[in-house]
Image (cartoon, rainbow, N blue to C red; front, side, top):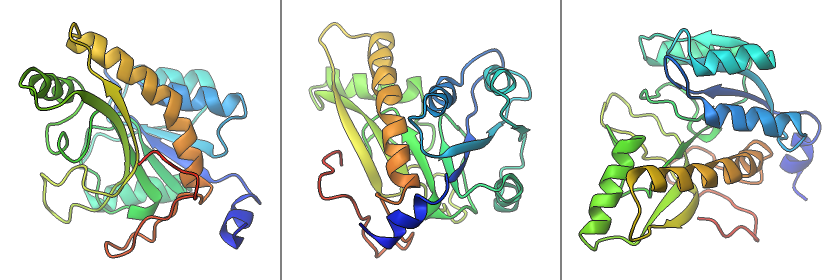
Length: 229
């Protein structure tokens, strides 16, 4: 066992979650991670959650669970992201339904979950139902047979506002598209897969079992048994 893995066991890594949610609901990914923490299935400690909605599902969940809530209306600039993460004391940042472009954070400590296959169905404007619409269109045209849940490290866009979803993929789980699928039925099945796997992959990243230096010329390191990439 590596020294890195041993050192990570000495304490629970501190995790801040960015989750936009909605004005009247949302935040199911955040709620799922909280639930896994409560059941002792998430090794990291969720120390704060951030939303760009002052009131809504994310804040309601945070209040109910006693987790510090940070309202972040912008500007969505590097200095603001750094300030929030530094003040929270986070060692890792998980984006779970966060819809704003992230910059200024360490790429090897920041990771995102995406409801579609990358790299083909990512980029600016590709989130939520927009991803499902694009995937279903490609399916109807005979170009794809599956969607996927993907997790990846988040690299700094360096001023390029279209530079979403570019970091190295650490997890991709295919979800077969059925002939009678609608956007809603496909989204529901993807959501089930997201909730099943996000805590597992989060544990691997925050424990150091999945490790990346953050340098573009450096490969991501995975456990020998890991198959989901």
